[in-house]
Length: 416
Image 1 (cartoon, one colour):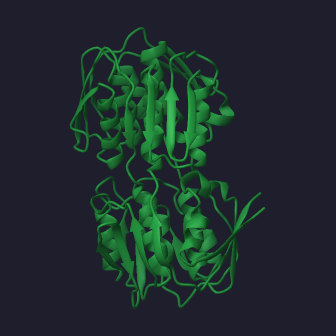
Image 2 (cartoon, one colour; image 1 turned 45 degrees about the vertical axis):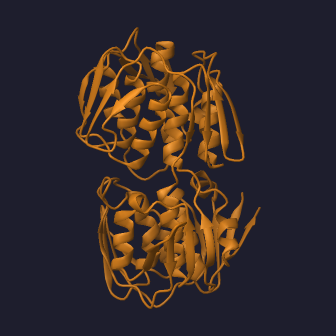
Image 3 (spheres, one colour; image 1 turned 45 degrees about the horizontal axis):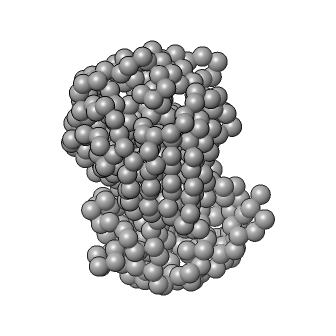
C-alpha cells in the first residue's frame, strides 16, 4: 500500500491551484443520468471518489470518459443492473443514484452507501423525501429498493439541513409532475452549483443557496456543458498548510465568498490572509492564537475543516476548543496528532487542544479524507520524518496533494 513520507521543517512559498469541488461534481455526475444526451463537465478533479462514481454509473449503462479535467457522460441506454456493493459502499454519494434513476427507470436497487467513517450518517431524510415524492421505499438485505411509476411534487420539510438529502430531492424532483418545495434546505455552494447544472439542462430550480428551494418539474432534460466550482475545502487545506509553515502562498482559484467562516477563524488565530486577483494569499505569521470553534452548517464553520485546522491549533499559544455538531465521531485524526506530540483531549463531541512548542514526526494512519490531510499538514512542520499510510483516503478527496505541496517547497515523497 502506498504511503506519503513528509520531511518537516520547510516553508511553503509559491502558488497552488485549486481543483473542482469533489462535493459538487459527485451529485452532478448522478444528475447527469437524468438525460440521455451527452453531458460535458469541466474542471473535474481526478479523484478516487470521482472514479468510483464513474464506475457506479457505468454499471447501469452510462458511458463516461475523463480526460484532463473534462468529463463526458452519456446515459442514453440505462438498465436496472445490479450495482456491486464493492463500489456503492466506497462512497456516500451512491445514494444520489436513487433520485436520478427513479424518473428514468421507475425502480432502483442500491447497496447501502458508504464513505468516510466519521460517525452516524443516517439516510432516513432521503427515504422520507422519496416517499413524499411518491416512491415506495424499502430496505431489503442490505439494499435500498425504491419504486415509483411516477413522482409527484411535494412539500418537504427537512428536520436538519442535510446537504445530501437536499441534493437528492432536487435531482428526483426536477422530472416529477408538479412543484416541489424543500424547506430548511442546505445552503452550501455545492447546492447552488447542482441547481445551476440542472437548470443548464432545462430544469427549473429557484432559491438554491437559501433555506427554501423550489423545483418546478419539467418533462425533459437535455445535454449541457457545465464548469464545476472550485473546491473550498481544498483551498482551506492549503491555506492552513501555508500558515503552519510560516509560508507565503497564493491559492489560485479560491473563492473568498465560499470561505468566509474559514477566513474569519484563521485571521482570529493570527493568520495573514489577503484577497488577490488570482484567489487568496497567505503570508507569514508571527504566532498563532487559540480559538473556540463550533462546526455548523453553511455558512458556519465547515465540519470538513475541523480536522484540517487542528494541527495549527496544536501549535497556538494557549488552549483551544472545538465542538463538533455535525458528526458524532469526527476526531479519529487525533490519535495520529497525539502520536506526533499534540496535546489534545477528546470528549464525546468536543476536543480541547493545548498548544505545544512543536511536533515530532511519527508513523501514522489516514483514517478518512480530511483526517489524512491533517496528518500531512502536521508533518510539514514536525521535526524529522512523518510516514502516513492508507493514503487512498487522501486520494479520495485531493488530486496530487503530494505533488502540489512539493511544488511550493515541501519535502514529500510517495512510496509503495
